[in-house]
Image (tube, rainbow, N blue to C red; front, side):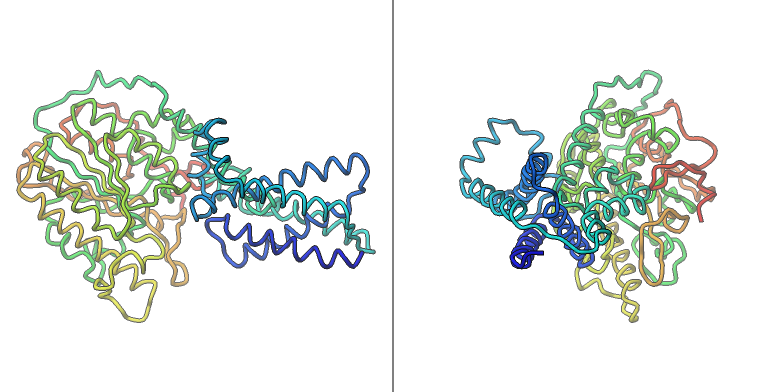
Length: 502
């Protein structure tokens, strides 16, 4: 191997690691270590390729694609000072050639950097030839850039199917890592078109009474386990405000989520889609709570503290676009309360308000202000989790006070729970990871016909939420799609009986 190769290879690898670091949204030391190996292998494979006519063409094309990948991340960082996300990819897909050319004309530095990256890397790949005496070892090194992402796909692909396609999983640990969010973006772009297709929902058989609530608040919590709520018998007093209102609720003691991750569970909470029909396509999400509310004269308001530009929420973001108003806010979950208060004070009739909070999602320690750190027994994960439940409880207390004398109701539930494994809370396709709180609370002005006060002991799925939502709006006569057997949608997108979970 020529000595110059030892000089240029570290420069090339370090340059690419820097570009990787500013381009990728979430990175861990193990991921950076893997990408170093992958990049080294890719560069080495180009250096040992016979440099004849075919080799020259392949080297040019490989360098062009590599530099395109690098320039995407670099350009986004230059414009937004942030890594390249699927949200940026959506912006690219929704722009046109004229807009792209106009923006590019304002950034001549990016063009110059692209030319430099191409020229420098092509020179290195075409001029300096690497070789290892042992041919088997040489070919093995040259193939690692393909074998590593392939291994990742085979080992983890099925578990990640709900979140990203196999193509995206494969691209994660390749030199074309910035194409991964582009694949996410393209998938969401197509999904958005499918969800927003003009599907006629037949509401002709429903009966609409005149006793629906004036205001319905649906609070969708995040990763809340009923096992950690004193409302459900937990030894710590984590839900004192909800405990005090227990006698004013339709209370479900054995509610489970239809899936174990937000991307799958929330769309089913907000629509008539159930695990059994998931594979019939996303167009069925047209029959959702927002369109139902609109059909009976209600306006819908979506308020969220969850990250808008996350591919983990892509289907949720597409679905909630049916709401009349969309607001995303940053900060602790209580930042949503002034928005709710303003809507309540407006005295508008027929409103539905959806609050999608961060709740108890990992890391639970940063989901509440420090004054809510009431539990501190040295078990940091559990203490933080319980503190986050306590913080959500005070938010519920403020809601109860705000709506107490109104013709209003609150549906409280969580998207899914979490499983406690070795002192850590994790998402899990398990019974423990899906046992959630669910109840309906009533203001004093709610009609007696709608005020169902009971404790439901039977195993029940969040698929009932669409129908409870409709009931509170005074709607009856909807065709139920819920089977007698509770079914569950795993993260690998297989549908199983809930009882089969561990």
